[in-house]
Length: 266
Ligand SMILES: Nc1ncnc2c1ncn2[C@@H]1O[C@H](COP(=O)(O)OP(=O)(O)OP(=O)(O)O)[C@@H](O)[C@H]1O
Image 1: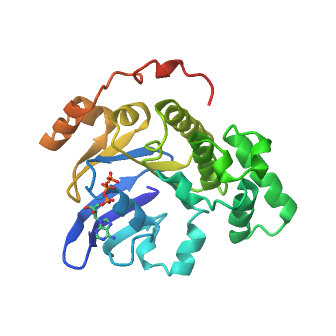
Image 2: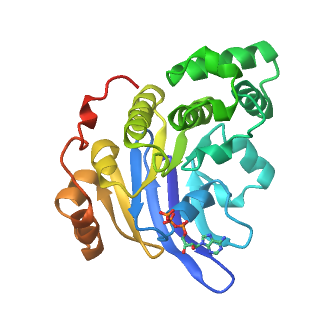
């Protein structure tokens, strides 16, 4: 297992938001976390990287490559984030500083992770852009000069640049139109195959679960009500809530609707 959460609870001042959650993610797998808005998916994923808002408290164990992340100091955690564990978010705009070029973002990220040589930083950045199918010309542009899909691809490039073992992807297509979202996920799937990193994929969209996940957990009101292999859960859901969510999903045909299968390239 690359990540094991054991009895993880997250509490506010006077309420428990996530209650005794346990789940395990295997090396290199695509693990989906599904559930309605407010069920605690994002907070659970933020707890992994010690990124919870300061008013919330986390208990339990989060073992990442046998090390309990909750016992690490903020400094130790900073060196793990990015290098071994990284994030991409729905709000990709918020990950960029408007008055810094894409080049500066890459450069600062690599510098912060100890790559001292400027030429190596530049080469690594250009290679990373290429790995997500973006032209070198975008390197000197500002974030607002890129489309949403291009910016999300830059986020992916940056998140994977240091070859993490686990990538946490929180609703990464929600702010994109459906064609751009589809391309971003196809790209993620391709890069996952190439790099072998595991993905914790937070989503509302069962079509994405069917297409990409190997296993999944279903969250309701801060608890996991069901978890297991994708085919078992999609074909034979046990919990009433899972059945309702699947029944409410717009379509679960094998392909994506609206001709999205026909989109070529990434
Ligand atoms: N800093 C905070 N303090 C107190 N409660 C919070 C805080 N952040 C989030 N919450 C509450 O915790 C609950 C779980 O939030 P979370 O964002 O994890 O849900 P989610 O399942 O990811 O939802 P969505 O799919 O809409 O992103 C929600 O009720 C939310 O209002």
